[in-house]
Length: 398
Length: 128
Image 1 (cartoon, rainbow over the protein chains, first blue to last red):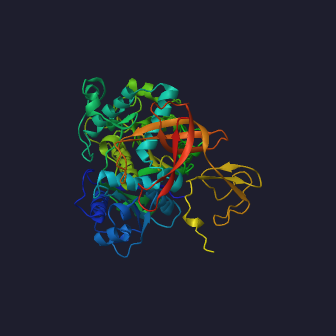
Image 2: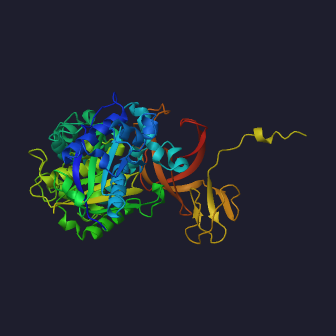
Image 3: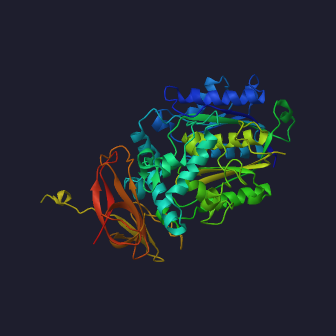
């Protein structure tokens, strides 16, 4: 298999971009990725475009977005296809791009992940996102993704002793990082007094799905992020202005569609299996990872995922958060970008955004105050459904 | 003689499935038995038994959901995951004053028209 590297990255600011066309948002990030790689003028030499998007048909009443974005970028006749895997669509698009290059089918692949969710109200958006649940056994019941987040949080609290204050500590940590990230949706810090300890915390930080509160739940965001992948063993690798960041491991796994049908509903088997496969592919162990981007659509997921990928023992991750081990200056910084909580979660863009953050950190290009000191390997976990289709990526600075 | 039985009131029910070959039970319906790999034809259900999933169960997890999706006009709804005595589990609504993990409940089925499209049958777990 050919080695695959990232030579260009692009990222829109996340936030409310509902006045813009989804194709324009994606093209903006993709153009930045091509400029970053010094390849904008030669873009028609790209072998393949792969677009990750979850639900443009619902949110934007628009289909065939891969064709739209290619045309907007004047890239015809470059082949372009869409990959959909719920909120893990972005990382799945990268995985398919990786497979295209590693297999020899393509040497240069442009991967774009994007979503514009805020054209509809939060009320409607919650309904659209819930369509990824089991149609009869979950969706029809009235359940939503925050609903499962709430139930998962309660089970974890009752089994391991996690408190609501522990969840608030995660928000404080991630907002501290996101406040410094120029792409983040919510570029503001929050204090533990305001959201947990103070007299008005119950008003500032209201319940969303008990015991999950607003500061333990990601915002609804719009945005896009893009990466240019290249075959590092091809002569074409010399065409780019940036040194590649190597994709050392990338893998995915699935779990039962119905959450209630998991033997232990607190175990995220797809996360564990995808991580084990990615470690094996990269020849690494959890101890080799310098920093990680973990899919904290709900803060509890940052904890549960960090345990499943082997960073901490089961039920012990929140103790590490209390000690600051996952802060930007800690032993293993997690969600250096601000995570989904602060950076935002445009569902189809999240996986590509996590990958862009890995590249920025490994290149040493993150903003002052949130750059990890000399990182060698970064990991990202992009979580589809409520853990039923998960992609794990490990990027390396060679 | 005209048959008007289609207009009779039918109590809402939710079906569970049993593989006739090996006896494994399922909810919701599978397409292939995980134990003996028997195929289920969703039109005929041939070689599969169906039965109403209802009755006593235990609450495994619950939440009070405040951000309900489009179609729901309540301020909040309670949801839970339960386990029936035959080992099957289900997700659904909870109508309990003070929910607590491990409490014994009874699963009932009601018709709901809040989601877009046709009315559907939903579980409502209640105290005995």
